Image (spheres, rainbow, N blue to C red):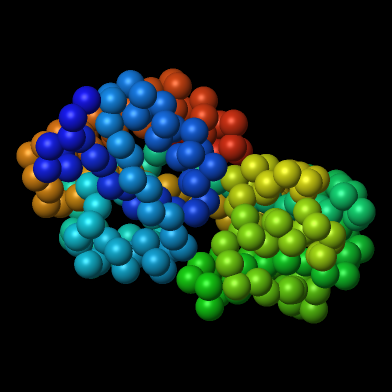
Length: 241
């Protein structure tokens, strides 16, 4: 099908934590709609900056925390499409430990020497949020003493763990389950109060053709086909009314 003035191209800004799901969803939408989806992935800070600029995209799937007032002002109506729990993954050498309860999680942390976290300077605050949550529960010092900060998203940290450079990674489940070689230990206990929702929505200003295509894409995210892809990467799907 011929493309006229980019009308059959959809530019989507996507959070890194949603990447594994998007890389399954986008090709299926392309095949169904006979179009091209151009994806730009980034950290919360990078996707926020792109949204604030307000140009170069037709739709977004980004973390709720990345959408400040300025960013939301550049978008149309958004909806929460899924949530990624925060979990822990282990290197093959370390092997999994039980983490289902807070006591088990604390014991697992104390049994390790090096735990990979995303460096806040990389544009994501999750590593800092994990330590802050542990501080409130009285064992932040245990994580802080073992933390190895990596300049990259959780998937990059998980790669270090898969190679045995660190014994464990704490990040979004969607950035653990999809990295070969990491032994997934499970989500963190509810008492940690962590998890990252993802919101989807259209650009506030688009050409009529791309606006229609973005609307179709956002509707496609609500289909069982797309939701199955999300679940397969560890995401919790929010049913839409």
